[in-house]
Length: 192
Image (tube, rainbow, N blue to C red; front, side, top):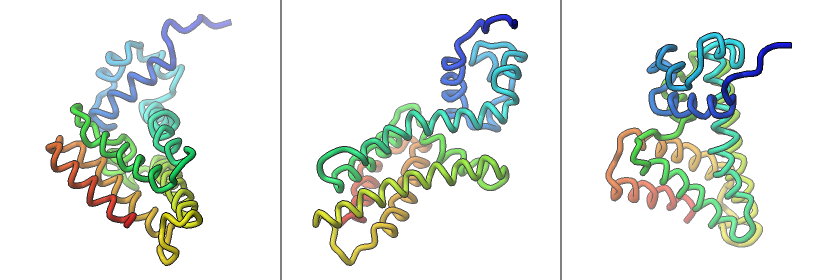
């Protein structure tokens, strides 16, 4: 029987998420990562595997925690159009965050793109969840008469997902509140 871990795996993963979110995958060395997580090298390997495997786990953790919050907004009772607007507001708040971190998924898409097939597929699946959730809400909005019948929920969902990722990336620029508010308002015109 092995020794029990001297650290909380969940807490270490959350710390890794914060580090990668702020600095990116390539922007953090293993020593800084270990120091920030408060664990030893062997503990990283035993618990998470490699730095790359840890990074993949942090993306999954981000999707299952932060992004899940946005997806839950789309499932609420009430106006489906308002739910979509609230998701846009969620991304506006990411762009306004004073830590200028943006969105981990958007940041990774820009940083790694298609250079790593497994990470690329994970990002595509994650963005697909957002797009499908928005499209579902917009189809409901059409059924309820909140969205004109000639509008394509799928096309709007794709455009909104693209705009939300752009809004999240702009969060890295630490734009003024008025600039982000303009982006938010412009994004909402897709629902008109």
